[in-house]
Amino acid sequence: MQKLTIPGRLPGYNELKVHWGTSHKIKKEAMHLVGWCIKAAHLKPIDGKAIVEIRCYEPNARRDDDNCTSGAAKIILDALQQCGIIKGDGQRYVRCIKHPVEVDRENPRVEVVMRLERNESY
Image (cartoon, rainbow, N blue to C red):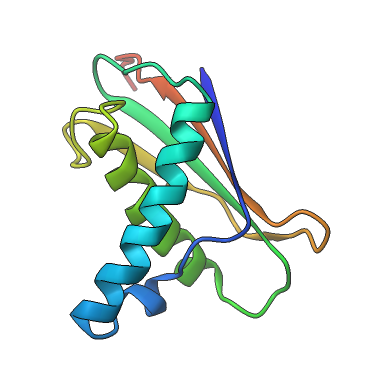
């Protein structure tokens, strides 16, 4: 199991669906931050399908859960792929679990836990 903490909050889905030029700049800045956090956490590549759990801690309850987690998931998965931690961000390589958003006024952040999926029969 590997853990990653990203300080602050990441852009939400609504912020990423604006004009492509603006969206590109917002996403690029956020991916830069996540990339530095990945390097600081010394994450190792996952060989196989990864389970990626994302938990957002917002400074207030203004943004809805789906907006927060969808934007965060897009940026985090793209950055993990770009940094070589996961092979791709499609269903073949990742199962993403987004938890309900919680409020932490003192320490807004995004926490990511990753582990290799074990093939289990249901």
